[in-house]
Image (cartoon, rainbow, N blue to C red; front, side):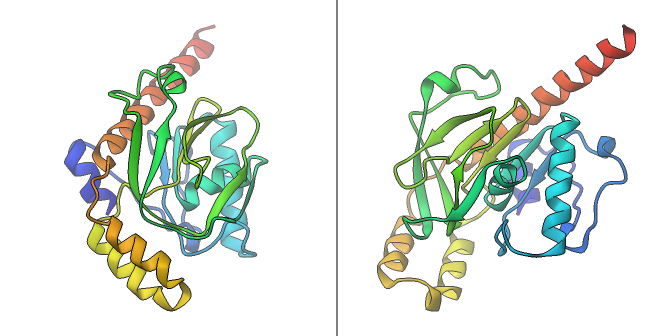
Length: 228
């Protein structure tokens, strides 16, 4: 899904995949210019060995100032690994097209966040949400339903609760697969929303620009340290 998505925005990008559920990781962090973590059927607080190992990897990326973009589970893992908290949302399942307000004052601080809109929409499928952000975090977009829809932690970690990589057809299949676990009104509302437009390509452009920007910043700082 991410390969198809990124190809629509910048076909020069090469993606390398590491299956962290099987504890596959890069041999060194410089193997990639930046990292992106996907969604998962697991929760970040599940007692699984691979999740604990992955949490340590996120902490390593943060301490080494490597750019990271977290999607859904990855967004929540940023908070979980760095001192925040994640819980099942009191508002219930976030399904279908979900809207969030992009906070203009925050957006204008970041050159990678081009063509900012007042509202952004993405396909979503999540029951958990961040309930407490780590320190040194900034909320870029949120809503009453999902207050922390898009956030920065430090300068080089970007978290997004929605799924730019999903297609409406895929999410419809996922909703119907999970139907026995879902309230009927939630299913109806989610399915109706799937015809609404989303800003998945714009947000993908932000992701790419974010990684390119902070890759340059990190490498420039490292070069300066080496020279001095």
